[in-house]
Length: 173
Image 1 (cartoon, rainbow, N blue to C red):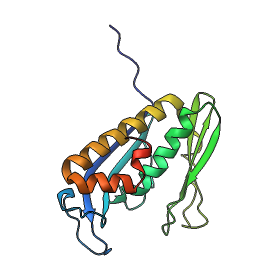
Image 2: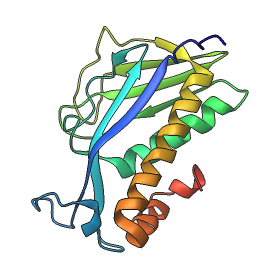
Image 3: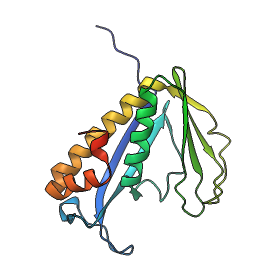
Image 4: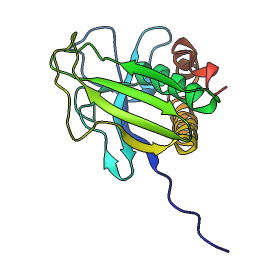
């Protein structure tokens, strides 16, 4: 039996927690997520060929996972199609850059570009960083499946409702 080559994409989450409706509220464990009233935040690391995608808003420990579920789910849908596409994600936060994702042929490409909304600058070391299109789709599906499992396990019915409110069931039922 031979080992398969490592994937060109890996996506991990960490330190899941909930925050209530008030921005200055201290983080709480997912078990405290209130049905219909709360957000799930945590760490997010996206590795492309072993390189960590930089400039994810608010550091790696407090990003809004609801936003990234939609972005990554949409990107997975594009990567699974037979067509070539480009999509962008601009976190619209002050000082942050925009992420540009392009799927073309067997490849997928990630760039960090200037954001007219957030004011962040392009990153010359992150222009058209290539990964495998299939690896990207599979890594996103695995990430979303693990994320949903952790949320439902730790937050129960409120976690299932939150997942649905983020349209997560569209990508991972």
